[in-house]
Length: 354
Image 1: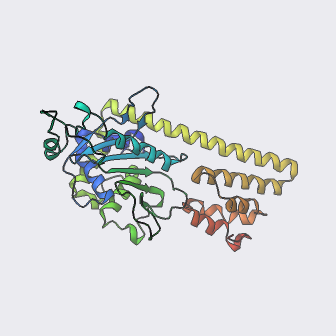
Image 2 (image 1 turned 120 degrees about the horizontal axis):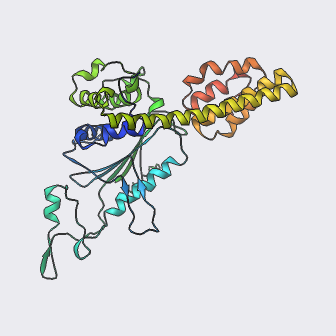
Image 3 (image 1 turned 120 degrees about the vertical axis):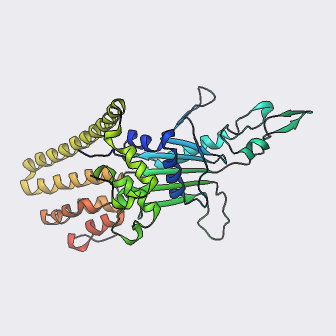
């Protein structure tokens, strides 16, 4: 059994990064991932569920939602399994802290949160109608919102483990429209510490290494032992340090993960059985090929989501068992579209890249 919790589970992620007692871990993680020019001075955790003002409005729910003393907002979403429209989901979530900045205080004025920097609190004092009020008028000046998604799968088209985006024009002839809304995705399957670009001499790569392999460590790796933040993170993540209630909660999240795996395994076995049945009616050889195609398509869909037309066509273009057997040994290393096409659409498989 692993000595450390899985940080990609709901409980594990919130235990490490959503606990007030571990705020310094969260601050270090955010500063390193976002590559902030200055360290975070302090952080306030907010309700992860942002309730709407009326029952007709929808709520946004996050794995982690916090603000620093400068009133900048940080949203972190941990998504272990593939879901549709993750980018739309992050954008939707980002609208809540943006809209919350227009929250009205006294006399329709904006009031900074209680943990905001003293300079912001002092600036909140103004004179209105001949009397002093403890809030300053809001003029639509927004504070930055940073969205981070830690993913246990690969987004369509991704080729690297860390991807950054903002509302900017790709066309160099156009000026940037807005740079206060930033998105970062950490796609753990693409992280490979053996590649030079992911060497552990960079702090961000250390976080990727930690998140991806924490449940596999039997002891704290040498690179982390003299690092105060990571050493504390390992202590927090140690199963032996969990209370009985926390251990029960963690086992419950593991059960959800295992249940999902069981659902996927059932789908796999169903595809395999259907392939065998078809083999009996149309001939064993053809049944094997057909069953193999269906299983391959099922597993790739579960891993990547909807498959492009050229991939689907290439799967159904496989004509014999030998071609199919050239693909299976490489399945574990296929974590992106480029690698998939390399093995599936290669000339040795009787197909060609379209």
